[in-house]
Image (cartoon, rainbow, N blue to C red):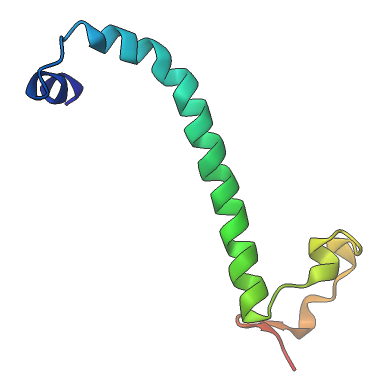
Length: 78
């Protein structure tokens, strides 16, 4: 796929080796961005929906100390 793209753009196919040699370094950056996004977005959504327990999120309370009997699929029962 990469060689087809390079030839379509009129770039030399020798560039594939160069691109493949630096891609693992770039991939580490892409992975870090993906992991950060996957961690941030659920927290933002939970905060906006009002289901984020901020004391647990901020580590003011240990998760093992929570009584799960009042939790529902939608969050904390009223």
